[in-house]
Image (cartoon, rainbow, N blue to C red; front, side, top):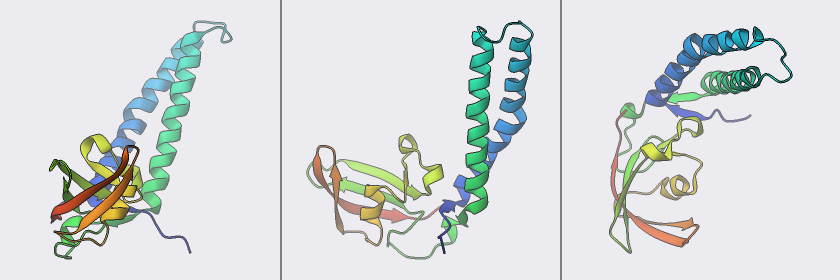
Length: 160
């Protein structure tokens, strides 16, 4: 039996909002753009029409991806986890680079809600996999493009 992919409660709410926006705002805009471009005549050489169709394809693909991801997900309320300072799915973890002392902060989330710019890393990523099961004070090694990096787990918290 295949395991259901995890999503945080906050993440699934954000994904549902994106899905609603795509269905209620973006989809009607794209349909209107296609209709307007179609009214301009010859579709073979109509760049507006082809751009609108491409946007429609992207939008419908994202809608399907979100609907599937949300319906198949195991939704986890991170604020209700009680695992102390052990790193598990949903944890907000502060790491210190052992070499430089620089601190990084990540939250381990589901693949669909991952966004590295926001500090949300996929549970399937090498960094998250290295952190899972560790506790404050433990060291982890992560293979990076520039070579192996070592970090110390400084803080672990759980909040939605």
